[in-house]
Amino acid sequence: MTTDVTPGTDPEPNPHATEEQVRAALADTKLAQVLYHDWEAETYDDKWSISYDERCIDYARGRFDAVAADQPLPYERAMELGCGTGFFLLNLMQSGVATKGSVTDLSPGMVKVALRNAENLGLDVDGRVADAERIPYDDNTFDLVVGHAVLHHIPDVEQALREVLRVLKPGGRFVFAGEPTTIGDFYARWMSRATWAAATNVTKLGPLKSWRRPQEELDESSRAAALEAVVDIHTFDPADLERMARSAGATQVDTATEELAAAMLGWPVRTFEAAVPPGKLGWGWAMFAFNGWKRLSWLDEKVLRKVVPPKFFYNAIVTGIKPGG
Image 1: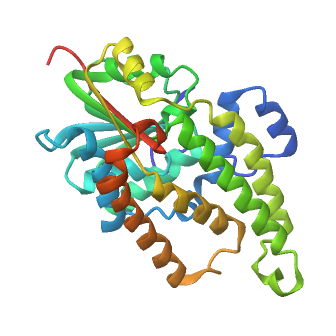
Image 2: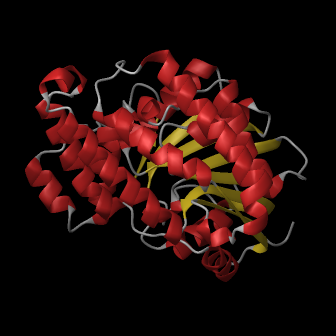
């Protein structure tokens, strides 16, 4: 499925999947990707505390620099694969990594929001709804391809990486961050499920009912959660990511991992935020969550990274180069 998207002519997203559509999507992972991410598109930035200011600019640039800090900047033209709301590419562009951008995603809703975010930021960005295994751009188009938390959604990751290398110019680089490790995904899911069960059950009690989302919203969240097991296809050992990138044809392949202690806080916090009414927690909670994550990220980087094997961290980052530059 490939469709050009420009502001005002976006495909119509489907933000409220019915039970019948969810049942159909359980047997069709790409349909599930569209339904799940269309459902999340308009609230995704709030759900994950995404912004386009210094906080997230620094975060995105930190992920990029973890594997590509020694490269001359800016890249002339960059593409984000599986862009979501544009978090990774738009913040990288604001940090000076690229001059012109393109966003692609299987979800029309996500491309629509990403283009809107780019327009609000005054960035030079175009967009297409696209399957990552058949990227709708010509060979040798981009200087840089990036993605955040996208590879684990793609059925054939190696084919997608081959497509990435095809659309890169010789010597062009890709950087994919935010990919769940196998061990990290196990403990993150366990903590999320426990937090959701606790929050939704405790808020049934009389004094805490004002902290409970309306039942129809919880039901819709549950339908979307049913698709999560379908859209989250892979977890990775960092060594497996390196192997796939090399098998696809990349050179100078490298990986890094991050978030261990930070993930232990981050996942329960995000799940709790999703379980209670918007705005209920306030600015004090937001500062607690952000500052707590920053402190634990420091612990991960300065201490735990030196003594804990990479496969135990939650996020993996992989980079590689297209030969011939």
